[in-house]
Image 1: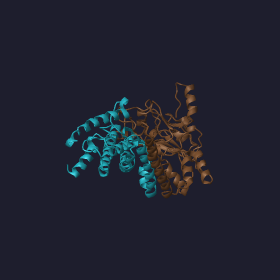
Image 2: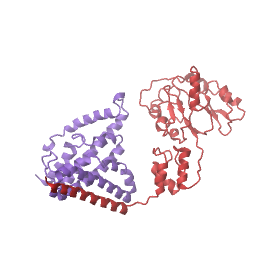
Image 3: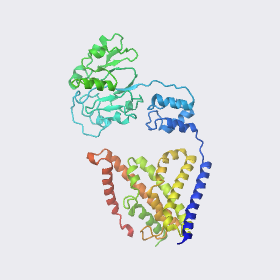
Image 4: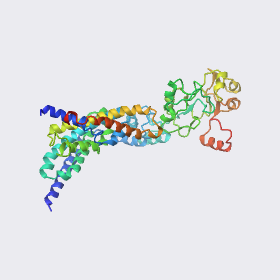
Length: 285
Length: 206
């Protein structure tokens, strides 16, 4: 057996390993870039999905901005209050969490409520459907239900069921507003989190036209306007609008609305259990 | 044979005739994984070009001045080359981080991926170890030959990556049957591309 060969192999590989090891050690000292250790800590505390909802290209630039003082500690939109508290602890400041709103889709028409005038067979993208003569829906203003908002949501808060109805999970939604920008029909709005009485229609069609193409459309009958004691709901441009500052959420408008276009949003869990209780009449959301 | 023409043949052979992805089926994982967008494909191609050329240079030196004189190259070349590539990637990453932050951000994600990339190891081995590559115009590479050959391999990799990324971007919006969406149609397209590249066989006697 040739022992010298083993010795040579050890020498060659070991020697190279030592050379490279020393080289890397020297390089790590010589090419050391000063990084505030808090950047790493803040980065760990953030959600880390690089969703971009904060306005920075990713979590690392956001963390750098927080450490430099260029961004507030509650920069992470997707993380919400828990993350803001963790970041504030690292930075040694008080939490200044601003209450963020929640996304709301101003359309209620699913496949069974809104009448189609064509069959759309293109790719699953609302923007594409909107380009091709407005997709398959007769309503020019309603939700196309192809899930562009669902795709951009960093926290999976938007659910689209088989009937193309959109449900925003308020527990998950962080109010980042990515879906607002994504919707080609501008149906999504960030509303105050406490607001549970909402208009779920964006149709600018006249009542008679709207009624023909959608069973749950606002028909601008002004019944809600008359019943409201607080001057909080008005009909403009053929649909109802709620003034969130004046609204006391009494729910009178929901009761009088003939087409259930004004709805009371309840937590999904409650809605599910209620749907189970009365299978025949699906609860409005 | 004219020296310049020989270099040209070597380059062309590495680039098209013996294309690393489509003819030899090396580096299929970045080929499938990073080719969904043209932008990322270009980033990966540039990083591979950079690392591959440096890895071959250092491997050539270590083979000719350390492994060959000691007579241990035949069985030790894989660990040594992996060691070289891994340390080099680390080193380059540090240097780029110090010199240019924008370049570090652009390349940063791809550099660690290349550390154990089989294409880099394959190019280094072929360019350095005599008899490993079955290309009759070059048996024992000199250093300039090795570098030119490696650049050819890396550009061939980049060419196919970018081409394939363009096709995949189009595929995203094409009416592909549901069961073929994603990787399956990707492999079918890759196979057709590979067939097309086989047309380069015997080009200029290579």
